[in-house]
Length: 88
Length: 385
Image (cartoon, rainbow over all chains, first blue to last red; front, side, top):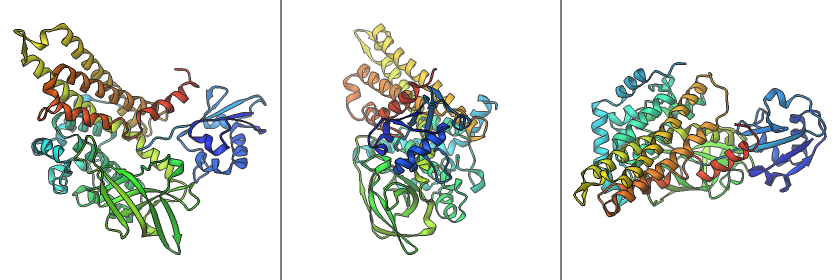
């Protein structure tokens, strides 16, 4: 799958937007990416190891539910992570 | 869930009784002078029974508050925005209770007793200490552990109500810099340095910069442990966008009424200004902006309330849309009012020049307009309407 990272998260992946990752599901793909870029893990996952609510994941241009994140995808799936952080 | 307007207004008017309305009028009367001098609203005034009635309105019943939900509380703030001339007051009475409420959510009895319950009688106010001159992933305010002591160094550049607060709900990074904690730091803790921030508008809001120089706090002042701070901040800020906007809707109504009175009573070339079609068109634009923003904010308050009650599990993009639209509408309303009233609006004691200055402050509050657009746009490009 291709994982696309943008916006505020891109600094955690050496400013590379696209990453080819081999994994059966989107969530496992994201976790694989955080193994390569450990600093990304804290931005994406909370202390309970759940995806933080201010992150949205899209699989093949569809917003992914928690269930969808754990479903198998094709090798050419496109997974995009959008984060929405705002200040005070 | 039913959103009954009649029952709502009964509840709102129950909060805003005669004593509270008189209090709001007194705050209004003192506002122009305070604004000229950049004086914070006196702490004593926020501790009066009338202020306490407002401040306790949205605090959970479990800790002694009146337990208004977002819909009800937003509509109270809207009425306050209509009645009270002081924008800073609106900002403070929405912010301090929001901090107390999120502390109450922690279920930490020690922290609730020490930092949340005091809002009920005006004895303790806690400010939100988050903003630095950097992004949330790069905070420079750091916490290090030395035995069972926590030592904090850093700076927060803009605290609403900082000059009035007894403590700060402070977002700090761990030693590695990447995981946020939330801690409570008292204004009297050794090493805390406070400095007023003089702003263009909202000058009675007690804006401050706070520096932490080797501030030592006990570990029981941790509100959120390592790694939970970022989610906590967004959880705090998300509804705040709409709550703040609720007050702004009231301010817009006030502005429209002030402007229409001027236009109806000002004669030019033997006719009231309001009889000129160009003036009618401009005022119509103002009214349209106000009505659109009001509908959006009201709807967002309902969705927030449904989520609060566990009845709605949908996207929260509505809060950003409501905030963004409300701020843009507010800027349009004040600018058009300025254009229609001409030189009269430019000079003290006409409040319009202060309303413009106050309104510009909303651009950056609870998520700056440009960030709201970027975040919304990035998602919208991947989602069909």
